[in-house]
Image (cartoon, rainbow, N blue to C red; front, side):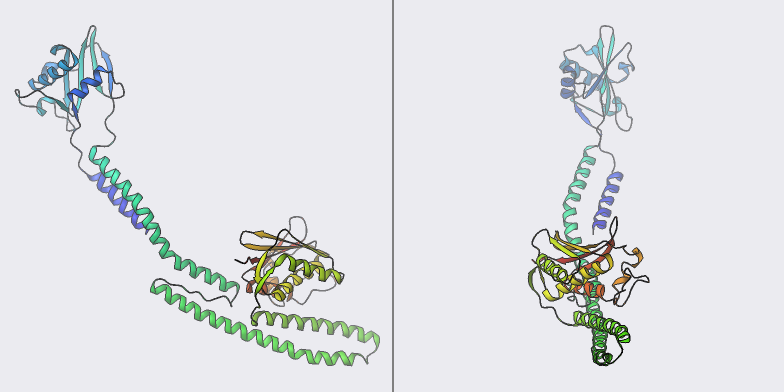
Length: 418
């Protein structure tokens, strides 16, 4: 739309350039005489010359009438004024006013030179500047500027209306990339956009069904593993102490993996129990619960942050990140603050950090770094996956970045309640 307006205005400029020139400028003799008497140097140049640069007597009788009119208005004798004049085509005064008789000449047309006799020579008077644009050109230029100013707001409105469906469609695609359970887009616009939106909704439904099936299958497998693990725990009681200790550690690790898998499946399949809550208080509560178990964690909130979310799921998200920071970074500190329309929680640890290339891969289920950040355990590989899944289900996200000096930062963003 804006390009069309620009092309139209360029066509107008081309037409302006191709217009025939305006007729020569007309200067009333009375106006010229007034400017000479006032010695108006903004309109005229005044230059003394020792000799006349043209021969006054060659201008013809018509020029003589103009000279007499100027002399009368200037209070001079007719022989004290000499006039030489050409138009835009270079025609001389004698050609412009061919008749010898007739009424007095009251206006000069075209470019002129005027001589006034002085005591020691002549005073040459000429127009200082020609008009920058002729009258017709000025009119067309003004019309061009006014039409451009009038069309720009209209073009912007139409362009905005045309682009809004694309923006909503792009926002829906971005939301789907973060969470397959996002609300399907309701896009109104041209027929092509509506067809693309319908295809997008069908794709989203298929993705949601695929993710749900895989998650439910994973949850069912994890649930079924709990029974044999329970039997193994009972049978270990009859083993010697040394063997029982080693097997107990293996069983505990397997049970932790089962719990994490069930937690991930529940997050991806069950609807959220949304309610208004204060996120800073929830963060401090999660940190206090972990501190009671001996974890080196702490938390603070700069101001109240009201969000709409599931308190159980959000607390699990915060607990996972605090535990992750304490396990791999010796201790963790979290701070909640506001950033525009979002609540932000930074969980910092003092560990070695992670390679930048692994900052996204660690969110994949069951993915662990080749070298664990802890000597004791590499974790189950599900804590960060669960945390991001919960954040995205609330319209937010979790990202990792290395701190400037030392340690890792996990940043959670959750939209504030309206």
